Structure formats: structure tokens, C-alpha cells
Image (cartoon, rainbow, N blue to C red; front, side, top):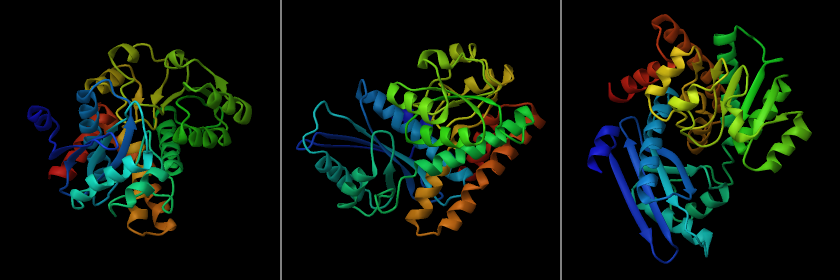
Length: 339
């Protein structure tokens, strides 16, 4: 385990359980040099504890990079709560996790993530003040979608030379809170939408409300399109799937889209422009961080506007150096974090 932590340059890994509620929690703190670690709390099924730990570690590292490039005085962390087969009292379970967060004395601030809600954060807030995206603070998903939309525009400009998204064929995988908010913006911008989701009700809603074209989830990655937009869980791009892509660019909201760093180079070799996920999807982090700090909507909006500029600068440097934007983003984030 220490070897894995060293490889990821992880500061700390905390495991906690509460036998009364069934809580099994993992908190990974990647780096706190720039400030306390902020990162979401996932509540998902995992095949085993090792998979959950590895997910938390990798996501925590991504949060450090995301916060650094977003210009936030924060480090990166992530919590993974392994979903038990039976949940007797959901709020009690999250209250127990709140006590875990409180015991970390402010080194980690938790937030909503996959499988959790603002109501869950309200339960955590009964035990600690080191929590954001509560009901009072609001759902960060629309702000993530806003940032990804701006990033897609930057990507279209850099790869296709398009100022407008009108008529572009955009394939969106995943129609959760972020994905659906994003397709609404894309539809309003005149894009032709291909959509997939494991829950067919969400797909049907996008078809009926937005005129989207439904595609089976397994087939979406190889559909011809201008921009592929992954908005589900991570790890979908590997050596095999990259070979089947029929798009000019990949720019989506999902965390950890690349199965390993070398996949970025495969995309580069194929001429597929890749938007580093922790750059394009930083809108949610920006919102929860600045809202937690009490900043105004105007300040938050101005900060969100920087996502397009950051991506454009990364693309420009990648073009000049003939390298993947993912490699450029990693270098810039590490320079900010480690000096």
C-alpha cells in the first residue's frame, strides 16, 4: 500500500468503519501544499476494498491537479464510501462519515459526488463544518456542465476551427446530473446530439425534449462524430477503445477518462484532440470551493469563465510542442503543486 501511495505521491490514506451503520469509508489526501484537500464523497458498489482504495487515490490526485490549474488555494482529496448491500438508515451512515471528516481537523473538505446528494451532505454537516454542496449551498452539477460547455467550445475552435457549435455532431455518453445539463446547453447551441445512458428513461427524455438521437452505450464510442463527450464513470479510453474512435476530439465531464497516462499519447498519434478531464470539468470544484468561502455569484462566474482560456492555452502549447494536451496539463499542475 505504501508503494502505491508513493507512486501517486499521496500524503495520507485514512480508513474508517462504523459497525452500527455499516459505514466503510476511505479518505485519500493527495496534497495539501496549496491548502486543505477538497474532493467529493462517492457512495458506490465496488467489487473489493482494493478497487475502492485505488479509485480514491487516483481521484484524489486528479483533484490536486484540478485545483492547482483552476487557481484555487486548495489541495486534492477524495472520499469513497463502499455501498453496503443493505442501508438501514442512510442519514445515520452519512452522519458517521461526518464524524470521520471532523476527526481530520480540516485537512479534508468533502462534497457531493457520484452516488451522493446535497441531502447526504446535510447529514454530514450535522457532525462537521468541513463539508460543502449542502442544500443551502446548492448542487454543483450545473456549474460543472457550464464549464464543460465552455471547454467544448474551446475544443471545437482548436481542432475544427469552429466559432459555433451549430451543426456539429456531438456524442454524449452519460446523462446524469452533469450530462443532462450539458446536452441542454449543446442543444440550445444547435449541435446534433447522439446520446447514451444505461437508464433508458434519461435517453428517452433527451430524445423527446431535445431531439437527440439515441445510441446504445456499447456503440457510442465508435459512432462517427465531431466531438465525443464522456460524462459517465472513468477509465473508458484504453488502447483498445482508442483504436475504434471515429471522432476529431474528446472533451467530457467524466473524471479519469484515460485508463492509463499512455492513452493520451495514443490519442495524439491518431490526431484526436483530448481535453484533459480535470481541466475541462473543474466548474463544479470552482463552484463548491468559492461558495464554501462565501464568494459572490459574480466572482464564481468570472472564475468559471477561465476554463475556456486555460484549455485554449494548453492546446496552443501542445500544438507548438507536438505533444498531448494531457502531458502539458500534468506538467503545469505539478509545477504549481510541487514547485
